Image (tube, rainbow, N blue to C red):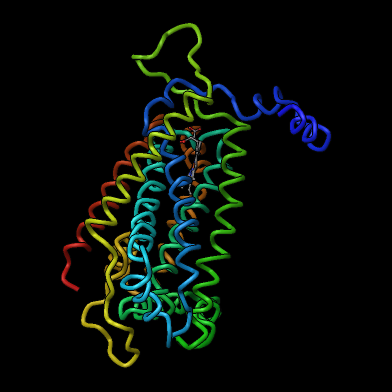
Length: 349
Ligand code: HEM
C-alpha cells in the first residue's frame, strides 16, 4: 500500500489536507431539509440519463427507415432494453420536474439575489438545455407524435421574425423534415446538449462553492454555536439517500408504467391529435391562446425577463416599499404554470 502511495505521491503530489478542505466545506444547517438539497437531484438524474442513454445509443439507429424499428427492438427484444428505455424516459420526466422544483425553491428563498445573479442565469440556461434535451429525445423515436411534434415545432420556429427561417433550417437540416433530420436531433440529444449541460453544471457548482449557499435560519435550528455541518459525510449521506430513493422510484415507475411504442411516423397522415410531452403543455396552451408569431415573441420576452429577474427584482426593491412583491409574482406564476398544464392535460386535442 505504502509503495503504491509513494508511487502516486511522486507523480500526483496532492496534499490530502488540501483535497479535504476543497471537497469538505461546512454547509449551513438548513441543507438537512431535503427540499434544500433539490439541486443534487437533477445532477443525479443526469448521471442516470448518461448511463442509460449510452446503452440505448448502442442499438438506436438515427435514420427514418431504421429509427422506429431500432426502438422497437430495444423495447421488445434486447435484454433489459425495456428497462433501460423506461428508466431513461422516467428519469427525463423526473429531471425536468426536479429542475423546476429546485428553481421554485431558489426563487422563493430569494437565493438569486446579490451576489448570485450570474448563477441564476447559469441556472436558466440549465433549464433551457434540459427542456431541449426532452424535446430532442422525444423526437428520436420516429412515432407519429414525435414526427409531427418536431414538424410543428419547426414551423413555430419559422414564425420568428428575421431568424425564424434559419432556425427551422438548422433544426430540420433542410427546408422540411428529411432523411438527415433524425441524425441532427440525435447529435443534439446525445452530444451537443449533454456537453453544454456538463459545462453549465460545472460552472453552476463552482459558483455555489465560491459563493456558498444562501444562509437561512429556521426556528428549530440551534440559535447559537456552530450552525454548520460537514459536507462529508453528513451532506453526502443526504444526497446518497435521495439517490437511493430515486433509484427505487425510477425502477418502480419503469416496471409499473414502462415505455411503449406508438404508431410509426407517417408524413402523409396528420394525426387527429398532436400533443407534446407534459413539460411543453404550458407553451402549447400559450400558442393556442395567442397564436403564431405573438405567442413565440411573448414567450421569448418571458424567457428574457426570467433571465433578467435578479436585476428587475433588485431595481424594484430599491425603488418601492413593496419589497416582497416577488413572492406574489412567484405565487401567481406558479399557479398559472400549474393551471395551464392541467388545462392542457385535460383538453381534447
Ligand atoms: C440541471 C440543472 C441544475 C442542477 C444540477 C443544479 C444544481 C445545484 C446545486 C447542487 C446547488 C446547491 C444547493 C442545492 O442543492 O439547492 C444549486 C444551487 C443553486 N441553483 Fe441550481 N441546479 C440546476 C438548475 C438551476 C436552475 C434552473 C436555477 C434557476 C434558474 C438554479 C439556480 C441556482 C441558484 C441561484 C443556486 C444557489 C442557491 C443558494 O444559494 O441557496 N439552478 N444548484
